Length: 179
Image (spheres, rainbow, N blue to C red):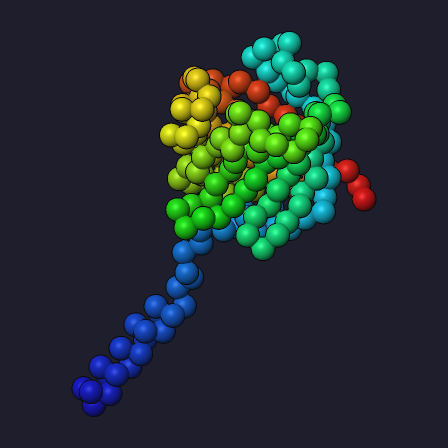
């Protein structure tokens, strides 16, 4: 009888362990959210900038969400300038955002591929990326940069925000284009 009770107790503990949900990595959830946006377009503009004469001021900003198995690319068009692409990848070290800047002929700009890894926390709809050492060397003053990319609950608004020295520097608000 005692071994029967011990067996039931052990089975109950094992069943409890099996029923516990596996931890969810929000970086995977965020990538899944981005992958769910494949093919969509978003348009809008600069909603805030420290510099009112920013190269983005008064210009339409649009992105297209392009996906492959290992990355999500968002070519960014500012007015007629198509030199920028945001690249999201999921390397073993975390979730990464890179800013790819190109000249009109496709060659890399001198300031390109800056960005960093997602900070701890975040959600399936919002992640903040802290500047890495490469970015700090490449862009003077950018060692404290944090880029936050967020998608509204209904998926209709994408917000891209840059903070530097814990202060807002620029923010784009882009709305999904029906299609």
